[in-house]
Image (cartoon, rainbow, N blue to C red):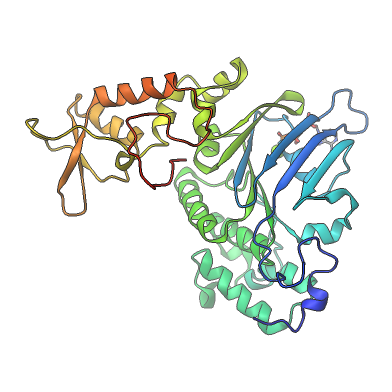
Length: 369
Ligand code: ADP
Ligand code: MG
């Protein structure tokens, strides 16, 4: 590790405690009674908004257009001034920080614009390290490392200009640029909103894989509830006027929507959506004995939602869950899915991410979602 420049690399950062200059990793974010009223507006854009994102978790801010999602992001990195309340990053109020310095500690990804058109991919990614005065070789190494991390070939990509990239590649570079100085917090405002559905799914999957490695605290904005369910460890649902309707795990929001607004927002198919949070490998399957499995088979990592779709397409035939060697692990039937949904609905899910259904296998597996 190059420590020659640490003296001026982090300024008076709350995170630059001695000995951890390099691994700022992630910091807890807390919003305390945050309000924002724009000049000349009668109603506040955000009213008394409070929630805490634990370090290393993804919080998805979701809500209809105009519910204050972008406003919340801009308050966090102090692009706009707050009207009331406080925002704490790593336990320290951001309100007393030098705003420009704060922004270097917060990765920011927005849709479409974002990349500087007259700078190469490499120069774009190097923006914050350059501001922080990193030595050239360290910056060059970091640029190549990040290009690798987002799945782009460094040799091929670093000297291109944004116009020479596809939309998906540009969004990846935007994520790399935001990660460049290893910020403890990432703000992503509808980052994949302008990408076609296939590439969007790919970018979502890539980001989740990346997050497994970097474990940043992330606030991710979307108006798409399906994206929220997929990306979020927790979801904050906003309604008009920036009021928090519910803050919970995806599973809890789908099982116990706080009110009619949330129920409507997550959709009448929330039972089906819930099935996307559980994989076949997590279920206590029916014994295959007697019942001859038909042609319908799927690996354990398949979601119950996808499996249900397969079963329905096959007129209700049970589905055999098979391992890598095509050995049958058990059967999934329609009645098993019915039981799973009924179980979850009747359990009082006080324990958030826990397994509310006795149909889920115990053990040390990660809880779904
Ligand atoms: P979202 O990102 O959820 O669509 P925004 O945070 O952009 O919502 O906007 C929330 C509310 O604040 C909206 O009513 C919007 O019209 C208003 N608003 C946003 N930016 C400004 C501004 N610069 N001046 C005045 N009102 C604004
Ligand atoms: Mg917005």
